[in-house]
Length: 205
Image (cartoon, rainbow, N blue to C red; front, side, top):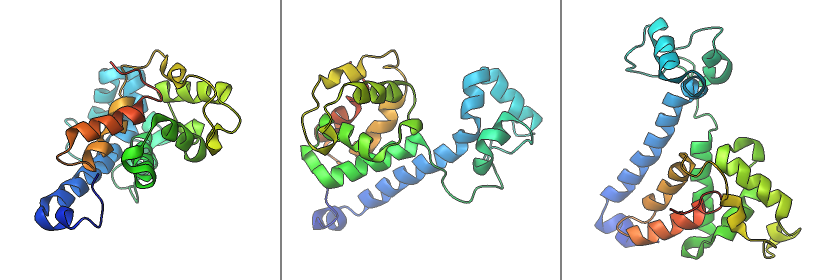
C-alpha cells in the first residue's frame, strides 16, 4: 500500500504522483463531459444523443456539451454544460472514488467488504445510488443487525446484497480504479482491494 510519507514513492519514481493526479483529473473531467447527457442517452439512445448535439451545432462533440434551453439536458445537467461549469458536480462516479479513498486511509490493506457496507450506511445517501448499488442498499437495510453500522457482525450473508439483475452494468468498473491508483506496481493487491469493495453489490465473475 502506498503511503504519502513513503520516500520511495515520492523520491524514486516521481512520475507516479503525476499519473495518479492525471487519473483523478480525467475521472472528474470525464464526469463533467458526460453528465449532462447521461439520462438523455439512457432514455433515447444514440439517436437521441446525436440529435441533441446536431441541433446544438456540436456534432461531432469536440468540447463540453452545449446547453439547449428547455431540454432534458437543461433540466438535469445545466451545471455541467459548456459556459456554466463552476465546479465538479456530485456524481456517483466520483462519490465511490472518494469513499474508497477514505476507506483505504482508514483500513488500508485490511479492508473488508463489511467495512465498505458500513461506510455506505454512514457516508453514502441511498438516493445517490443506482441499479445494483441501490438494490444492495435496500437489502442491507432490510436485513442487517441493528448495530452492524457500529461494528457488530452483519447478521446475514452479505452475498445477498449482490444477488441482483445489474451485475454486468458499469458500477463495478467505476468503483474499482481507485484501488489501482493507490497500488502502483501491485496489481494483485489492487485486485484484492477492488474485489472487497465491489462485492457489496456485484457477484464476482
